[in-house]
Amino acid sequence: MAKNAKRRILDGALNLLRAEGGGAITLEAAAKEVGLSKPGLMYHFPTKEALMLGVVDHAADRWERLLLEQLGGPLEAAGPAQRIRAHVDVALNAPFDRADFAIYTDAHYRAALTDAWVRRIEPWLTLPDDLPDATRARLTAARLLADGYWMAAATGVLPVPGRDRAALLAVIEDLLAEDPAS
Image (cartoon, rainbow, N blue to C red; front, side, top):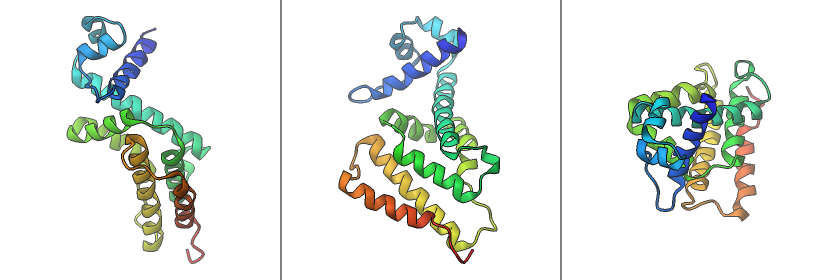
């Protein structure tokens, strides 16, 4: 029961960010969004910092779940190109919106929230030091193209026109293709 209440609160907090004109996550607003009193919400999240950490973990849980589904196996068994491909596929195909973008970017203004994102997502994006430079550059470029696409799609600001999507995907596929020299 408590787990369902926490999830409902976290989903409600993200809904605040989807509000027209952008909403703010406060204890009061989050409680109102899910029909709780502020003390009722504070039973689960005693401070705004605790609520924000919960929201970041909730969003990172979703990313990790989507990444693992895309990967089709454990992270530890995947090579760098497989991990980057999973990230690219999630960034380009999973439904995201401005709440996802807002919680991702807002987290970078608070060290504890940044640490939560880094801890959860960095293992997917870190490339081994012994990877050839050309391979590192290709994988990094594919990741950054996907990140830019995700940002534009999630925010709705200057999204990639539909007619350009297939060509963008082809460029990314070329970057992700195995290098015959390596």
